[in-house]
Length: 355
Image 1 (tube, rainbow, N blue to C red):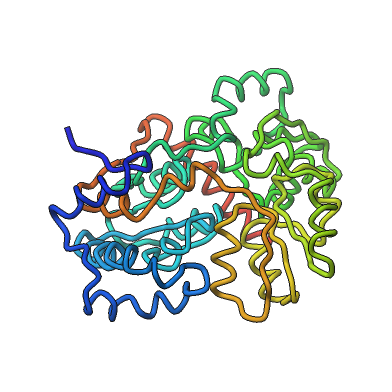
Image 2: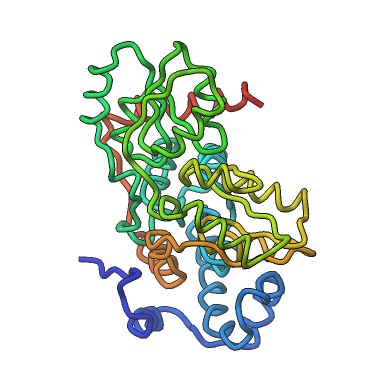
């Protein structure tokens, strides 16, 4: 049985295991090789901590070339992953689109499990790895394929638009997927005046405000975003006067009504880089504001975020171990791949039409 290094493995133990196969000393060569990376993250990672991260980053970047691997990282990954080892970064839609273009034979998904499944759906012939298979999602676990079929029976003829934050099995019984960046466009493009939109109730409610169609919802929610309240926004405004507050549409509608801008992670990033507000609070996952801050000058990023415990299961130690041992491989039942893939590919095609 292959030993696993995951987020529950004490870092001292993980590094001890890795040290049997890799030189993890902060040498002059490592310092030189990673100096450009540190320049990007120096405001997020103290200099005293860099000798801890740099050898891992150096070894990962060396090994991924040897293994013909590409690393896809979600915007919620920590700066040392996002800026240090990722080849492609983005939100769920961006990663889905880019997954169809990769030439490498191995994909390492630095995100949660449904994202790795989506990469496998779009690249069934390739090896897809996730450094910790327990990196789940409250939305994905809130609904099953059987639940979707029951909704279809209750609302016959209504198309099913499913958030990509779902399992491959759920996607397989879906008409088309969506992300927070294209939800309104997808809903407007499907046939009929009544649409089943699952599983995020708040994304569905916020989408309903922007379409004339009747939206039928499911009681799922993102544990990062559902806890934000309008009172939280009022407190942030009092604490940070003259700042702009932006939020993700997985937040409750009363939160979205109270902020200055709402959009997908990609839209939030673009808004900050375009608008350049002197001060901004990003009401979303904490690492995202760290990553945007590393890429943006002239903007003061203030704290008003939550941490996703699932995203934080991914770390440099288990990324290196994943490449070293080619674990943990993500597999999808071949019987459901065609239908699940069709739902994702239809989303990508419809997104192009909505541009």
